[in-house]
Image (cartoon, rainbow, N blue to C red):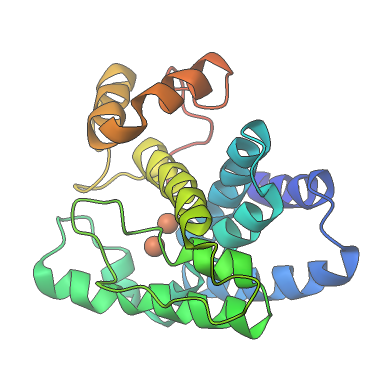
Length: 216
Ligand SMILES: [Fe+2]
Ligand SMILES: [Fe+2]
């Protein structure tokens, strides 16, 4: 499968310690068994977030971990909700929310403090931002890094939104939009990042002309 090759390539490119590969693959496989679309999405988002991070000289490896596991909490969310193609109701959103905290706790348990504090922001820049409050770092080395974590979280949110828009076929993201319409929607919904998006487009990191992967 395309995404599995991508995962191996990405883990090598960003020099993830091979000792950690089994942990990564095992946990992604739990997600794969529950919801394959989210599994594939997670690999693509991790790869893209890391690629943007490397281009911007940010912490690409932390972005990779944050991207791979940003939606791991969905392994505990009802399949019917994950597969829902209609717009989310307030109740749906409330039921979806815990996936952020579940993923945050898992990454903290693995002592991936950077990634945990990045991933907690991945829904904070959307139209319906959540969670309401994000957990603050307690580790002394991380306490003054909230702004940096948030800046990385903004990148993760950009990668997450891009992948949903380009690959998902539902009412919430990108259904029946032409490539031009998708580009326009992406720029409109991420207006604060317009200059960066245009730069990433020029660099060939974000492309709207063709889908990188077939629709799910
Ligand atoms: Fe999410
Ligand atoms: Fe996501």
